[in-house]
Image 1 (cartoon, helix red, strand yellow):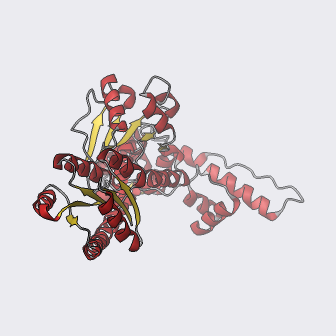
Image 2 (cartoon, rainbow, N blue to C red):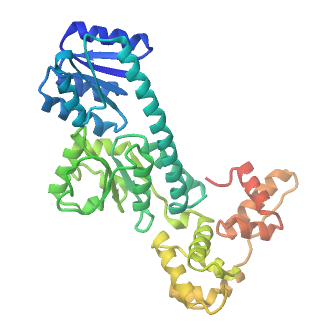
Image 3 (cartoon, one colour):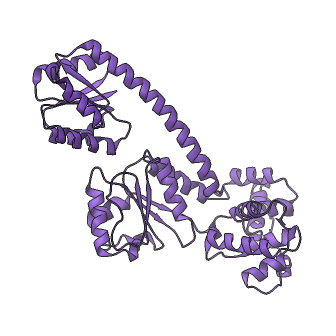
Length: 412
């Protein structure tokens, strides 16, 4: 455990240092609240012990700042035995407990045991919260294509950091759901999540939680300056920004305050468009339809139409199409003609089946592995990345197709 001691009196500071160090803790001691604020950001202590030799209001503000950076941090005050009522007042203002001079190793041991019990309980609660968050995210950001899994992994990595994050991607690529996932997976996940769409001014007082600012290319200069202020504050909100632009355009010099722009360059998460997510179109379409009506399904030709569409509106467009098709369905199976009409295309789905299959030429001396690799690759392209259709065309199981794709490195 890391412990920060804030005490201008060397005798009691050294006694506290020995008591915590003998219990195996890492301990740092400082003499001023100004230095303590800096050490909270650098040392990242699990517990802070601050003497009440400073004005009580100053100690209270220091504790509030320390808690904003880590709500689980334990806060103790140190006072003279003749001023125990000051310790009681400090507890009423947010301190967890107090110590008194002269230092008692037994009292320090008691506080440590209470702290460990509280941390164990909070750790269990945090673990449970994260499990629930991941279960929610598996639904709100469903997908199994390699590019989508890479984006989800980037969200997980960024969630544990405190740096601001820039989400990029075309309209409809679920950037708000991704921002919520970042928030829910972070240590701030139980605090407020505030959305500001291309704001003229930032909402709220900037205390705690996460602030999600959409459309930063349309955000006012005043709000951008306020964003820079949030970024510079040690106790400000976690910033998550998003843009439909290419990140290089969004981060061009002069677009954002320099400090914020430089930080964002190393924390960009790109959400790929739906047309680059292969079988995710089928997975999402079936899931959206099931959520509307469990009895409805897409027939094979209807799914071919969905897979062949370019989805310029991405996931949001797919949701609208599925909802509209479900509302117009007159039987349990939704066909290609209905899907084409919802998409605004002429009902001529036979062209999907009339495409001429490509020819894979085999030369004497080709290895069987090379022939198999080329055949699977060309069939995948012909099926527009649909692995289920690839398996059907090659008369193989879907599991075998997945294994072969992995073996030959056919998907990136």
